[in-house]
Image 1 (spheres, rainbow, N blue to C red):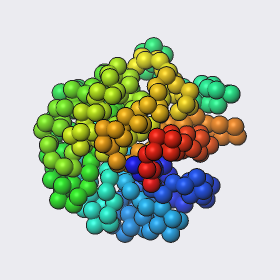
Image 2 (cartoon, helix red, strand yellow; image 1 turned 60 degrees about the horizontal axis):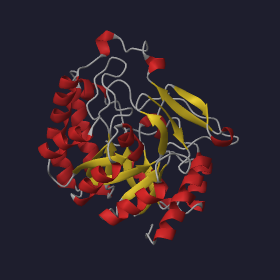
Image 3 (tube, one colour; image 1 turned 30 degrees about the horizontal axis):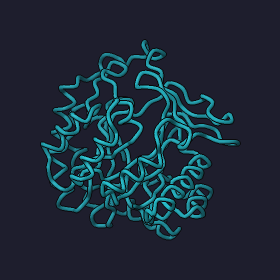
Image 4 (spheres, helix red, strand yellow; image 1 turned 180 degrees about the vertical axis):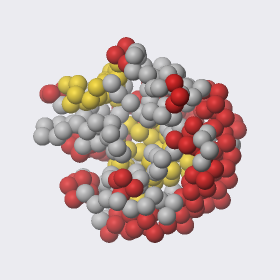
Amino acid sequence: MKLSLLLPPKYDERKWTLARQIGVNYVITKAMPELSGREAPYNFAALKAIQSEFVEAGFELFGLEGDQFDMAPIKLGLAVCDELIEKYKQMIRNMGQLGIKLLCYNFMAVTGWYRSKTDVQERGGALTSEFNLKAMENDLIPEELRISEEKLWENLFYFLDAVMPVAEECGVKMALHPDDPPISPFRGVGRILISPEAYEKVLERYPGPSNGIAFCQATFKTMNVDLKAVSEKWIKEDKIFFIHLRDIAGDVNCFHETFIDNGPTPMAEMIRHYRDCGFDGILRSDHAPAMYGETHQTFQGGISAGYDMLGHIFAVGYIKGICEAAGIKLE
């Protein structure tokens, strides 16, 4: 397995240095202009420059994650979507040319992954995020920005019909992230990637080698599914390209993020399970609590709540310890 962290695309002395010091070799980044200070990665020179800076710092840029530019017109099926799909295809070509192997994307419209609070106290007063559906009952998106599940499916298939052949041609694996939280409608907006059955629908339509899954363990847990059974099937079909490791306490209607060792999911057991099923791909810690001296970020902008460093340093050490004890080779 390969251990990675999500790091900002613009040099951050503290985060980049700490990541190297704890032995992380592989980086996932979000290369949107607001974070990189460069053009979006459909510009070859911009993406190459980001990659070169990571290489100079001792990392391999393994993949991109999230919306790398404004994807709303594609998800909502607006008039300019074809123009943006062409840019997305060029981004994939650039990734293939540069040897960047993974593209983790989502199809959450209007609102991305979301929590109702970001200042809930976890162990020792560490700050973490919480989702409470009841607290958001009246927090609705304006009617003119809403979209139905049926239309979202149509837009997803239109998008994938265009980009998946390019990904296959360029050797880039597209890992589809689930909707977080997996509730539909959410704030009045339809969501579609909220169950294993939804994923089967996408896998059946696009059976090629570039179509796969970002297995965000805690998001699938909120779907109230058997994590082992679902992941075993997809790993054996070579369809899980990326694993996000975090834990939550609660259910889909009300939950909060926990430290990786302080939730109800047997993390060591799950990591051994992934190995035993044959997974040898890339994984990363996800949504860590903010620890002493850190300020939990909000959901404004690119890399948001859950990506301060101290919680991830703890998580990386915990993952490494599990893997060493289990005899799992971790690059």
